[in-house]
Image 1 (cartoon, rainbow, N blue to C red):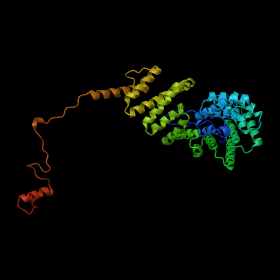
Image 2: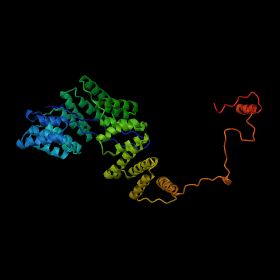
Image 3: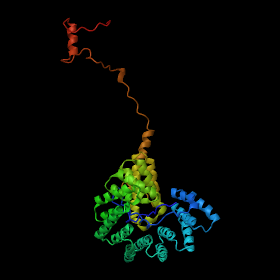
Image 4: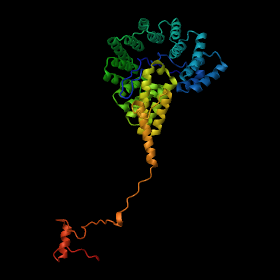
Length: 447
């Protein structure tokens, strides 16, 4: 059973818009180059391929293992097993499997493509380049290999080699959409924005002619508009991308960043939630989600994501090592936001605990009379808690008793001995009746 060729996103690095609540997050890491991930069909292993196609990767691996136990040199089962491991995120096992395939048959170009992607994801660009160059000896004009190689040259800053590699694609395939996208990226890196736009428009024109719906072209156009400070056009381009692919990670990241900067907290949280599913351990994504939910007064969700962001930063530690001053300021700002959230939720004890953990971590001491900055908030929380405790311990106030046993009696009519209010019909009627006049008689009690 075949599945169609899957081409991974090749885009500019994601943009981070400034926001009022927090420093702008850095761009996300660029995605890996495209790769031909497809199942190789063989009738006798159809059930295993069916599992792979359905995304049942663990079951597929077991099925391929059973086949390979009987036929160790079954090349199709070897490849599909490696692909299943790759899709499961078991990169080391997948790399080992592809290495074994390539060692036995260096003409397996699909194995080389996928192996190169794994190397790229691991940051081993030089080795990935070497793998692609060796594979190209067997097919000099293979478009997928050349496109992947051009992306690697670009990431290494070797722009001339990247352009020459893409031109080689055009020698055999002048309508190759991926080649246009990759060429646009090279010129974008060199800040040749007009040329970048022309190439991307050509990519879009060719994609439409071939009935290809490619959200990455719109993402790249969005990045171009951001670079030229046309944020409205950028947002429109990113929205076109997610109209084609609602779960496009980079498009949602950029929409979230722009929305957060414009205080559209509902749109920001919606977009960042998509990104968080793809990048669950990304500090910036959780920080941005925290601020987006705080803007909507969804304090519990805001606290959850901000606490997750702080934990990720502590666990990863990379940002602090690279920029200690800026990172410390950002962390303190996030802590302030968390403390405010806890206080707004009437959780002063939780806010105090956060502050004390931070003081211990940073070796900070606050004097009792210090009411500036962080120490001011810390002391303010302590004072609030103390006042609440004192109020809870205070005896209830005594009720006031009437003086001298006199009780005031309130009636609906005038007090005896006083004249009725002037013009009061009820008072006038009562006077007339008393004088025997024509006043309205009182109703008979027996009626």
